[in-house]
Length: 117
Image 1 (cartoon, helix red, strand yellow):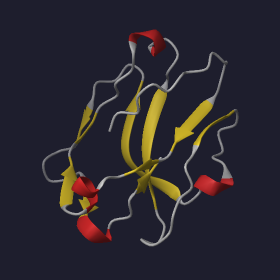
Image 2 (image 1 turned 135 degrees about the vertical axis):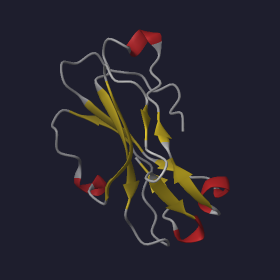
Image 3 (image 1 turned 90 degrees about the vertical axis):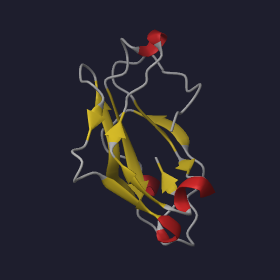
């Protein structure tokens, strides 16, 4: 996933979050995540410290409202507390992360919940 054109605010410590809905090409079939890449624009390389991709653990018929907000504390907003299972991560100074062949993260087809933040 690429989260395009998200402006990065120049504040000492700030946390941002965007909700994404996985498309049918992803959730209709099982997939095995084996790599997580941090792709940062050159304008933001000195600002962005880390990124995490969380899966939202909600019933398959539940909707998560569109979300694109900033906040200044480490604690996630209450409406995102169900989004806690890390399925991808990157931090400043590290190479892109690859799981070993026998591990990874499963996106399990039609019963998989379609929201990530």
